[in-house]
Length: 131
Image (cartoon, rainbow, N blue to C red; front, side, top):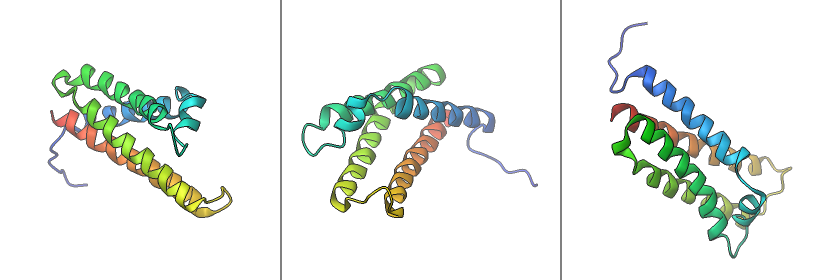
């Protein structure tokens, strides 16, 4: 395979992608409480649980940024904002369509949500590796 010049160090980028994958696993599955998971799905009083959940993601990004490039601490705020928008968008589409778990489109919605989070993490990893 021919050599390709890259804008970011590939090793650092790979480690950052791994760190963001671990952060996502922890925030979405291990640290997300029932209050967050159910609360952000409600049609009212959803802001607190959603912000708490997105805050876990932002905190994870802050820890990664502080370990790699402290000057880019503000990427945690970017992650918080993007995560909030993605999760709220998924809820609104889900509420509007009321797709049952037996409908393939329900799983497409979950997949699109996860895809958008991973693309966000790739962008954050590039920013940190290039920074």
